[in-house]
Length: 384
Ligand SMILES: Cc1cc2nc3c(=O)[nH]c(=O)nc-3n(C[C@H](O)[C@H](O)[C@H](O)COP(=O)(O)OP(=O)(O)OC[C@H]3O[C@@H](n4cnc5c(N)ncnc54)[C@H](O)[C@@H]3O)c2cc1C
Image (cartoon, rainbow, N blue to C red; front, side, top):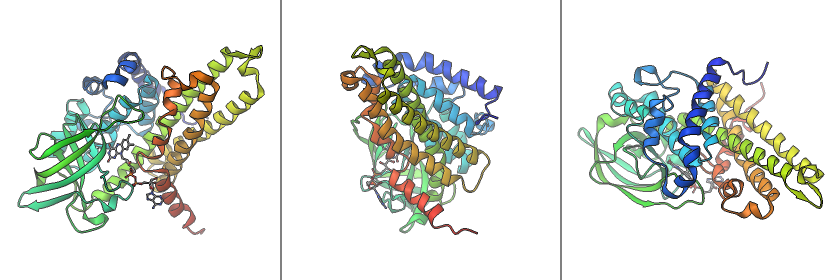
């Protein structure tokens, strides 16, 4: 039996996403790198049902599982516009899965349903200028006044932050530590909300990444997601899908880069023979494709454990994210080396991707945080 055991339904979904990527992303990637991808990409993806893959059909989702998220990511990555993929995945996973899982029906109707349709754009606001890894220490506050929260503080590195219609915000509604954090839906047209700088990144140019300010922003208490003081736990649960998404993105990117490199090695000659015939390159490719295969299997194992609601899934998810993030730092620069001078040219996709490799070990929890989780779950566990 092959693993994953893709069936006809998986393949049909894959074909749908592949067509969408071929028609709506790939032809525009070069232009979007300069201009940013357009808002209408959300509504086009929403019309095809790509923004609510795992969500309940009651809210416009498809009621599928993490395997379909994996397929979605693998196929979107063929568009060679990682910024657009990140923007779409924040919309359909990172900023909305907590509303789906814990929000009231009223909140879901008002914010989740239009997000699944791609009619309202979502961002997730967790990271602050003072730090992102230590989520339990965040300081943006939401003080309760009667039936309202009054929010003060700031967020940074927020994907979709410039264009979002709402931010799923982590804010301190109680005392210090993890138990003082709640999640709130903040409409961006509320008085006191302001987008600061649009941040310039080394890569992922088509996506917008912003700093956000909250200056006594008032929102109704009914915009809280789930229970007060449970926000930290909700975020940690949602991180599992987010990390699966990131690992899958990295693997798909590396597969694409390896194929591109193989084609170049087969075509390029030096000293009267093809690069692909030289043992040093053959061995290097052998090492890299072995590393990638291991990474893909770890990610699929993580997906499998999430789908079967295995309580140990967090260990596999963290291993998959760590392995993928560390692999990409070796794999893409090694591949760029095969292109010689072209490996340093802006026009070359492999070269451009080599610029952003360290980012994969930062978003959705850094590699150091993944090691912390793995050490806690594995090293500190006792054999029975
Ligand atoms: C392109 C991009 C998009 C992003 N999008 C979003 C978004 O949409 N929403 C959002 O909320 N955030 C977003 N982020 C932020 C991202 O989640 C954070 O950058 C990340 O969590 C790390 O936080 P930090 O940058 O504050 O680093 P810090 O937490 O300050 O860490 C700095 C360094 O110290 C290390 N470190 C910290 N603690 C320890 C420890 N205990 N032991 C060892 N090492 C440690 C870290 O691993 C890191 O290497 C985005 C970031 C990027 C680059």
